[in-house]
Length: 104
View 1 (cartoon, rainbow, N blue to C red):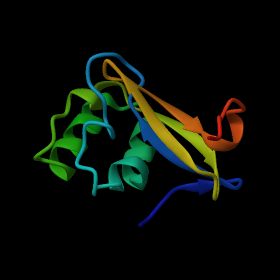
View 2: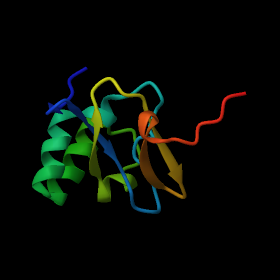
View 3: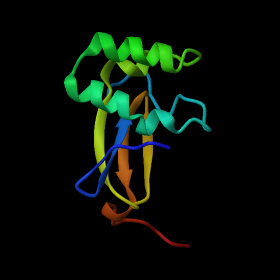
View 4: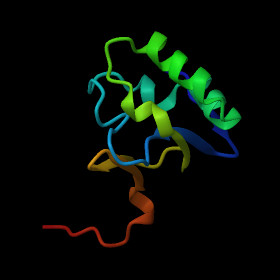
């Protein structure tokens, strides 16, 4: 799987706005939505119409509501992370940066 890696960090795509998630509302097996290099480029260029058109072509069977406010988070290469979603708003949680893990 292709990923954008800069300065030891990986670009991870998520949807911070409320209403619809992006990766959390996708098919579980399709991780390409988290890392797609072309989509990262479009997000960085802030070309909203092109982002929506690209997502519709690349993932035609997916609801595209979350594509309206996509953002890129940079995660250290090799770190574990998860996308947490509440009411459509996603955030990237990096395991090494969260201190309050509880072990049973």
